[in-house]
Amino acid sequence: MDNLRPVHPIFREKILLFPVLILCCIGIVMVYSASSAISMQAHETLFYYMQRQSIFFGISLCVLFVAASFPHRLYKHLAYIILMVSFGLLAAVLVPNLGIRVGGASRWLDLGMLRFQPAEFAKLAMILFLAYSLSKKQPLIKDFSVGFVPHALIFGFFSLLIIFQPDFGTIVILGMICWGMMFVAGVRIVHLLCPLPLVIPIVYFLVYKVEYRLARILTFLNPWENPFDAGYQITHSLKAFGSGGLFGQGIGLGMQKMHYLPEPHTDFIFSIIGEELGLTGVLAILGLYGIILVRGCNIAKNADTMFGAIAAAGLTLYLGLQVIINTGVALSVFPTKGLTLPFISYGGTSLVINMAAMGILMNIGASTPADRKDRS
Image (cartoon, rainbow, N blue to C red):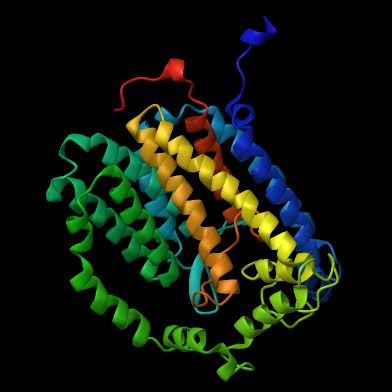
């Protein structure tokens, strides 16, 4: 009779579960190592950020379990509700006394004991809504007014709310997810390319006409030209990787976190990993991400519904973009963009949303062949 007992999706998807848990545990250790100096200075304890990250991890495990418990078809029916909640949260950021303004940007909601970043939830909300809409419109997906226009408008509305924060980087990521999901769903390539004449001047205005964004581009092209000002972050990030060698300096022995490299426990934690764990540690972590991404692609390929297939593709793309952009910025492959490294960087919102995404992906993957129906 024990063999007939239902197995929870997270245990049926061990190929996803184990790499995610390992990355989270590595994250707690590396957050402690990367943040100990600034934690002592700001909070008079070495363990402030590590303790909070451990609490976030406990909460995110519950979120993972709950997200994986619901049949993924349920998210299809909740797509509009999730979308409206996301729009409401993005709008609330702009409300005085609710939105927290840091460094000239309002990206956080003050919920008393918690701070929440609605843009992270918006990514997951858009993925679920697009999966619902694109799967529903499959018979007419090649039609410009059905397959492309409604989904481009949804992206446009998200962009309109986020540009006031402002957060140009999140808009770019949302656009890549949206266009990637439309491509997977079968929207014509010519339709996907048609906004280019409009996008190019907009990007030019938003980048080259805004001083700090232009400075990021110029710094990316030659960070060593001004290593003590605009190129400070990137040059110290590269120094961290350079000093790490093959096996690293050892956990806790890195120097760049000692008030040299800004944000060592969040945006640039990958640099600390390179310094303290070396090339070996970097490749091991990238290998764990690779396992998750390959499994995500296989889940998308073999999903039991079209909604599940498109959602799995979107969730996998979402995770992959975060990894590529964060590691690329740390290695000066891309211009500087504040983006966390999934499961590893310090931050409650990103960890919880990423674990929710993995829970949904696990549920899609745990659908057995016996449960399959026609893709609809």
